[in-house]
Amino acid sequence: MGAAEILAILMVIAVCGSLMAGYPVAFTLGGVSLAFAVLGHLLGVMDSRLLGALPQRVYGVMTNEVLLAIPLFIFMGVMLERSRVAEDLLETMGRLFGPLRGGLGISVAIVGVLLAAAKGVVGATTVTMGLIVLPAMLRHGYDPRLAAGTVAATATLAQIFPPATVLVLLGDQLGNAYQAAQLAQGVFAPNSVSVSDLFAGAIVPAFALVLAYIAYLIAMAIFVPQSSPAIPPDPSAPKGLALAQRLASVLVAPILLIVAVLGSILAGIATPTEAASVGAFGAILLAAWRLRTSGAERSFLLPSALLVALIALLLLKAEWGLPSTGSWIGVPITPLLVIVGCIGLLVPVLGVYRAGVLAPVMTKTAQITSMIFTILIGATLFSLVFRGLGGDDMVHRALSDLPGGTAGAILVVMLAMFLLGFVMDAFEIIFVVVPIVAPALLKMPGVDPVWLGVMMALNLQTSYLHPPLGPTLFFLRGVAPPQITTMHIYIGVIPFVLIQLAALVVLWYFPALATALPHALYGNKS
Image (tube, rainbow, N blue to C red):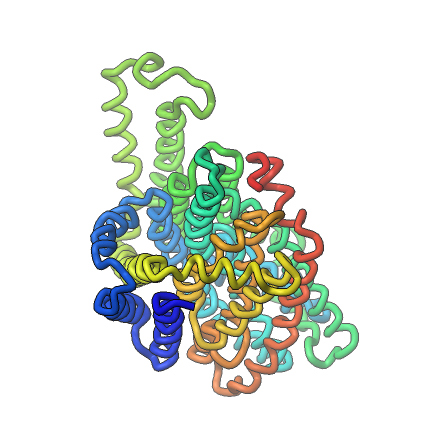
């Protein structure tokens, strides 16, 4: 092992040690990498001119159209958090399933799916459900450990359900790694793996995980009935047709929003970025409808939505084989349609602004987005220096020499990611670990990039949940009622962590759960 490779190993150790010491992720990645680049130059094992590629790489990050989906999806999630969608869903689903033993827990799992698909941000989902659900479950006699574990596990579904921010970032990193792996093998017209592939691949495993959660809740209701009692019926609550109407009113809009976003991506009509913009506008429209109670103001929202949808349809070109806009409706009409569409967009935006919601949502979105992109820029420098020190070749040799071949290499990487989840955030693991190991793994025979991505996503979801340092546990601890202790949360999530590990094992032996849908939609990527 040469001096350069020793420096590469020491750099990784220094980054992990600094992160465990509590230093900011972005500045740790950038600062440690720059220090080792200087050290490598002084020792004569790295050419400092390699750093000249950094500005172009940073520019590539900032102009990456795929990554533009991140602030839009974050905006959608934060806006829905402020529009009281979760409160209405949980209240109505609780009334529907509550009279059944364990029914409230099942309602939480179902609503968690909808919120995960609509928000895509774990922190927002955890805080929302922790504030609303935990007090209700405790009030109706649920075991504190089961209540805390259920809320934490279902909130963490936002890590795996599209359009999860983690899937967007993981898809971008894996796409780069897959192309690099093919180029290293002499394939100069490489296939690609996209965020859309990863979204499609995650759907079946995510729903299977939810079914496993619900099966566990049903088993607890049967074998430990005192842990999840039935809710006594409320005489004043709506029943029969009134309850069905209430359920439809709170379910239709979120489901339509989810279908519009994910359906347009999976059908190939829109890219993830374009679909994210649809989701952002849909979230504004839904928030405006729920926050503005005036009938006069509401009367403008539906025509506004229909108008924007109609104009978007008119301006759609090649995806559906329509003629170009200019030849179909005439060049003079196109600017007019754009102006009218802007007016249609303005109506719900003004409604949300007057309700005092738009400004804090944009502030929160800017904070989260800035954090993610600052980490990504630091990770870009880390990856550049690591490869300059020959770390990528070293990792490939190390993984190739492991006993068990490809299976042994993947098992070691998955185990390492799981253990790193005790001390590192999912974003940190994506930006530090994935660029190092993914190119080496994807060079090995029989490794499907979509399957590998979904395996990593499930593993990262577990890192958000398992004690002692899972971020979801900290989010929940911050909003949990006083009678919920930290030990309640830790013990409560253990069965769900075991379920997730079992899901990883099943996906290992049945990779078609992740690959069948994207391969059917977009063709074979392996």
